[in-house]
View 1 (cartoon, rainbow, N blue to C red):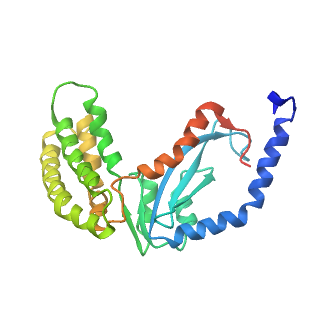
View 2: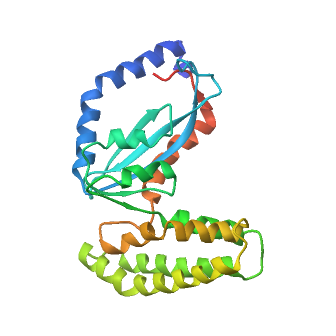
View 3: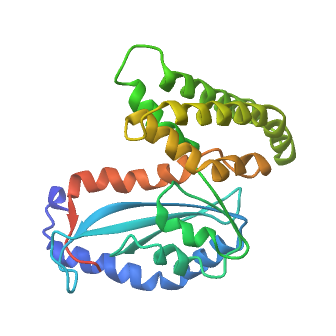
Amino acid sequence: FKRIGVEIPRATMCGWAIQVADRSEGLLELMRQNLIAGPYVQIDETGVQVLREPGRANTSRSYMWVYRGGDLDRPTVIFEYSRTRSGEVPLEYLQGYQGYIQTDGYTAYDELGRQPGIVHLGCWAHGRRGFSDLAKQTKKVGSAQRALAFIGKLYAVEKRAEGLSVEEIGELRQREAGPVLKRFKEWLGKKREQTPPKGMLGKAVAYTLGQWERLEIYTQDGILKIDNNSCENEIRPFVVGRNNWLFSGHPR
């Protein structure tokens, strides 16, 4: 506006944004209904500093949650602000939902995964992260690289699955990813006995084994993704924006 010679106060523009949001409530509820009507929801969250939050210091950390799901071909993506990172947030927002949910290993999602009719699957991008961080610290080929090689084989199967039908994807995973998962779990079990639990390798092994049941689930249904990256990609523009505008002036 300034570039075309129009001076509009920031508070006025914020008021416009709030009015648009207020008038969008009906649409947002329709989007939520579409989201929970589908068979598969991915969830992620990221921190944000918000000022003038009633009863809280300006330095408090709040959260933006993102949900991706609904129609598999045309997914709905919804951002939902909350002052907390509590598991009650997705539990309340997805009330009435039945189907798959996919998240990282954050424990707040555990209760959601225990709800009747919900199957909770994990994210191999997070399963990979601990080994990847360790591999970056050394040029020597060791256990971290060995773990990454196993995970790389799982992603290679996903590459071959591109363009296949849902049924064909499920069959391919069972046939090719299943044996890799079996060997990888056996290898992780041996490493757990040989590795100090507080080291980087020990923590990466413990995380992966602790999430194992959820990490295997993606092979059971061709509609599922191997990781939560689709959802994380949706939240990335918000994160890029936050790095520029730093905080929000008010929860509204």
